[in-house]
Length: 144
Image (cartoon, rainbow, N blue to C red):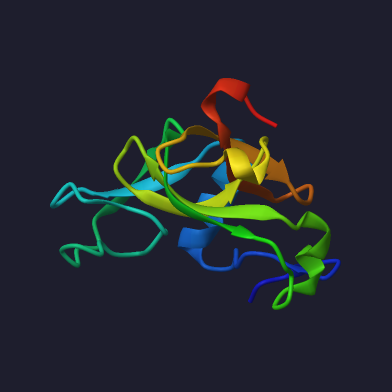
């Protein structure tokens, strides 16, 4: 079950696979998974390979670099009023250099500067003492 900080929902960290991912994020490391049987890489974390069904998935530390694959700018907080103070903000699919796509936010620049192909790197938004959310910023800024 996901928790809440203030009015904001928090990710589920209860399952073993989720706990490993979030523990690494809290340490400033971005993990993706790679199947030992077929080599397929995947994100979001699962206990099995999305491509071949094998349970032989292993963690791979991502360099945290990639580019914006697609994005949208959220300009109204109608569904999640807790995020109203953040409007406008960018939700993007970032294609990591390791070949997987991660849905996250692009931060560290005005929303109108985000474009498909923008080189980005991971940065971590410390939400609580135990939780940091991976987000992405333009690669040339070096973080938020």
